Image (cartoon, rainbow, N blue to C red; front, side):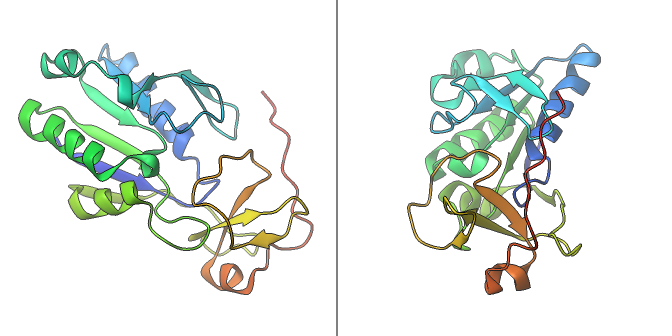
Length: 196
């Protein structure tokens, strides 16, 4: 029986890389998995997802999906990247895919924003997902990163601004709870260059 999965993690936890690898595993077994993302995520291009490590994959836009094709069983799995940007109504559509068509849906995204508040899509997924799994990463201190920090133009943590501001690797980092509350981004945070 198919399930709705929500795999969440702080910034830098390899959520997108995991999504790309899951799609690859389906393809390797001659299965048809579809990667999608919400239209608000234009950071890496309109129909592309890209991990911080350099993995990249073409994708479809959630708002433009052919729902009849999904209902007809064209896909063995739906993989949703940046799922925090889904609306609660879009999450309900994914529940419909799982429950009515027995198609697994695996969502990857942030649980909370840089202010520690739930994204609407994440809140809906936390309420309704059959399986909730954490994709882990670490804070600069070595503890598990649980919070997302937004950096301003000077590299200083900020807690003001719009909930959604798309940024590059230098705009957000994952921190442990104590360093997030303290606003401590660590000694000399440097964004590693992508090798790919």
